[in-house]
Length: 96
Image 1 (cartoon, rainbow, N blue to C red):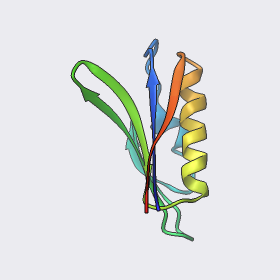
Image 2: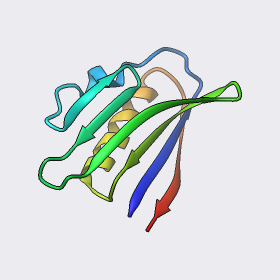
Image 3: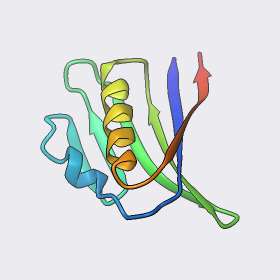
Image 4: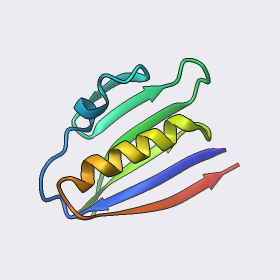
């Protein structure tokens, strides 16, 4: 099963998510709002991406499978974004 969530924000201030998660053992690469994580023990991969479309922008957090890493990443992203702006979190996809 793959998981995906989206975070919508008023974008009051920029948030460096890569810096916030850069010391995690699962951190693979990242810059600003883009982050790639991978759990060595389970192979779960999580990606955080800034999406810009039709004048709107939001963050998409997706995982290759259900797992703890997705939940940790979603929680960290939500907390970091909420420090600077009001946010709305939506679970948008659960594919088998």
